[in-house]
Image (cartoon, rainbow, N blue to C red; front, side, top):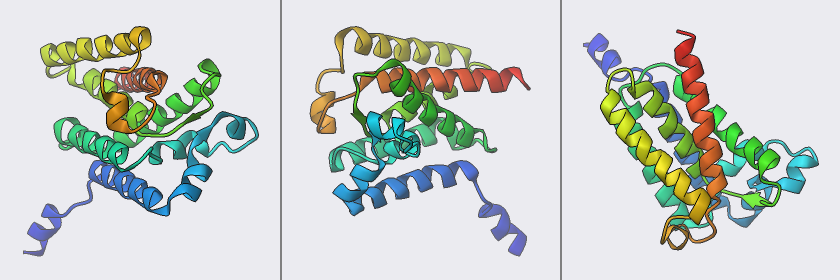
Length: 195
């Protein structure tokens, strides 16, 4: 009986990651403005040595609507792509996507002075998932990949998708989506090549 219970409740690192990010983001939201000011990406603060902001910015949101929208997307990505995945690679994909967004903004988007939200990381996780899914479901991965590329291209040439700024409660930093997707794609492809 105990072995059945233990098998049913084994540690799932991907579920732990998803739940941990969600809990941390909710706690940051509950902490309010002081936490936002301490944790959001601010270009001048990162350049002054506050490098934690490259990661912590992804836990800060513009408001409750932005938070709910990002966490719903995170759980949807978990349900569709990561749920049956074992291993710690999703931790790696998340970390690299988060750093890719922060370093991308710092290096290639000097005009962006501040950033908050999880959407850049979400784009990285989707891109990584599509690279992985290509081995077992190439048609689906290709179709979704074309959709993702179209969305990213639209954003780069025309700005945020219609109504996305209204839904998030503030400006959408489309460069974060691009940098996250590139980072997720590169790390997933590199990991698969090393197998």
